[in-house]
Length: 310
Image (cartoon, rainbow, N blue to C red; front, side, top):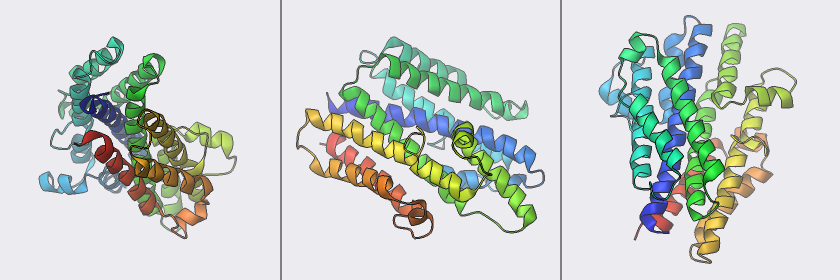
């Protein structure tokens, strides 16, 4: 496979996953602010840290409120991680792959671009954020569903899957970094934290799966353990690392011994999550959330250096 095609597939997977993550975050946070009453501004500010766009936001906005943060993460093309920017970049990559991917995949991403990437703050003025984010989430799920059902399990599939899983692991680790570090004390704060952790589970569509697995209350430590280390839940960090490793193994079969360091890094990341205890991560920092996030990013950099640069 040509390097430019592999890179387009990789980034297409990342950008569509990024758009879905932003849509989920905004949708769930919208309802969380309704449930927490007078703490609206406190609920919107953390979204900038979770998305990694706090610095860019400060360059263009003053106060982080519901309108400015929602606009920044949904429509603003100056934000490379907004829903509109992510879908636009995913479409650009898909456009160069039209002879390599099923027509249904192209039609789905093109429809998402036409329906969502030209929306403005008028969506917020008419209270249409929920519908906008739901459409972005559904289109992402349809896109990956079509890919799952129609793409051959060859090198192209593995590159797209690698991008998707790297983005998913990165996003969830950022979410846990912000939410686990913001726990407060006192009865009133405990009620707010309960809403926040319910929102964390709903952000990654884990609420029902968690309730089936855990029959106690919403314990932040247990939630973090489930989202970090559950081997069967498809949006957990461990699941992302294991399937990322499998995708890179499949690519490596076509390039035997070409980039052994890349596979070693992916194997190390998978092994750390397979053998770690939640207290190792949350309390002892061995590895900590920061370190795991660095590991995911280093694997991404290694993929780029190995396959996409000359």
